Image: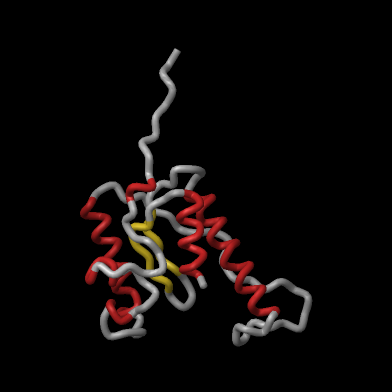
Length: 148
């Protein structure tokens, strides 16, 4: 469900997903600066879109452990996200390796290619997954009008 929302948000705001890993309680994203809006807008749209789906599925009883008998709205995400600017290809590779190895480090799988909710297989095997990775053609050169 999260990857479906990520792909929808990627298309809508025209940014590049360089890499992703969805873990049981958090996610790692490496994205470009979006054509429109800011990374904060992207995260807000992503978190809100996913939370709405989780809450709706919970109300329909389709997600285990999400039905609630009280009137308090369920909390899906923490309030903020941590961002880090990546300026070099060396740092990009370092971040991708860290992200893709996270499920292995946590003991969820024996090797990165076994984790279904990751961009690892796009890099290792050229597979197209639910989220388009490295689709740079969505970006257009940003230009400023000439100074007066």
